[in-house]
Length: 117
Image 1 (cartoon, one colour):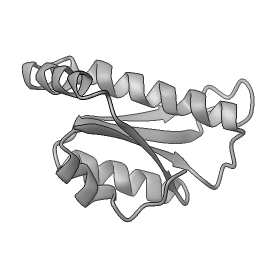
Image 2 (cartoon, helix red, strand yellow):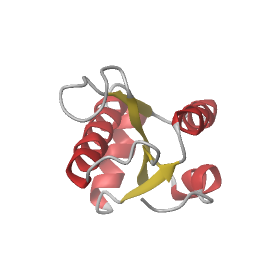
Image 3 (cartoon, one colour):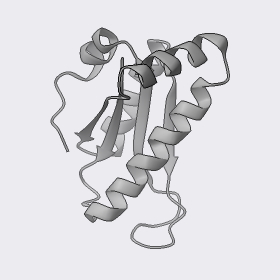
């Protein structure tokens, strides 16, 4: 089990901002997972296995949204983060997504070709 977080590379976010956005996405996806019995079980197993997270990059918003839809089509829990625009980017900027926790095989099939952030 792992969680994948995908950050837009075209925004060239400062490291701290990228880390904060990735954290928002991770937490939101986990909270959404807790809404069902199956999701709660996935979170439980994921926690027992060490809560693996992989942070990858998408070229731009178009690719980010395409990847989000692929994950949704696969039935994965997802979270799309839209920034409030108080610091680095304009309000409403879509910065990243989180997918899972989910089985490694599912996430590898969906995102295995992406590069690490």
